[in-house]
Amino acid sequence: MREQVKKGVLEIFVLAMLTQGDSYGYKIVSDLTTYISISESTLYPILRRLEKTDELKTYNVLFQGRNRKYYQITSKGQLHIDEFLHEWEDIRKIYQILKK
Amino acid sequence: MKTWLKELERALHTKFYDDEVKDILSYYEEIINDRLSSGEKIDDILSGYEIRKIVKDMTPEILMKRENTSVLRVSKSTRQLLLLLLGSPILLPLGIVYISILIFVMSMIFTAFLLIVTGLVGFIGLLIDMLQSSLSIPNVLGVLGMGLMTFSMLILLALWTYQLMALLWRKLIVWFSKLAHRKGESQ
Image (cartoon, rainbow over all chains, first blue to last red):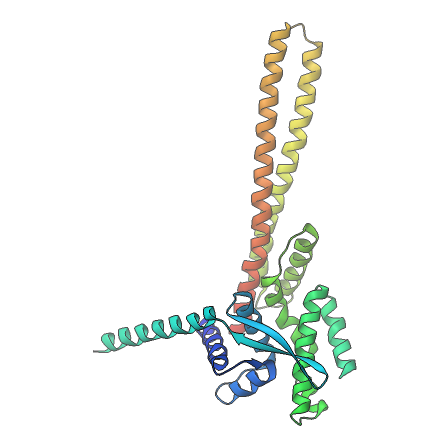
């Protein structure tokens, strides 16, 4: 269960990072490692999964003579973040009620 | 870096298809190039990667998203999943459950095949029997009509069983890859 939550949260972090602007693999890992521990191997399946579910789209940009793959969040990705935050808020409210 | 990428490519090719290998390779090549551009040393970068671990970690992910469109692909994915499940003590119980369900699926597919063969043999037998019998033509046609109907029903039943089992076989790959992935993550 904890791992499933972690995976879901990582997806949200990646999507949230991309709301700041389009980015590429290495930059996403570098930016995220400021806050959480994540490796390139962990990021790869997350990116592919989000791409497959149309929450991200990609395009290539020529950089120093090679292609660099950029990731861009889609409206579906943004919706995923909104829904997640909404659910999170509900969980927090229920927790507060139960604590009383 | 080229040598390392070649090694990774070789290792990935033993398990994955060309398009899957190409995607993983281009991902790592891009990351390594970006890390080099940011000033990291190639030896430091490569020492952080373990090819065997990359291939092992990628296997459930690739199997989950792979579209098993042909029998060949389904067979290859099944073989890889079995190797993954049976190759790790943590995943071994999952492997045993997978094998058990797989045996059931295979038996049902074999049964469907046998149903068609025996139906066909039975109908041919009935046809020969009717040709040699002393029954009147309307009676022979009636019996043959019943035989044809039964044979058609058998074929339909066998086809539905095969389709259902083939679907279950493909789904099992996805379900058990997911379970293996979750179990692998939780360890």
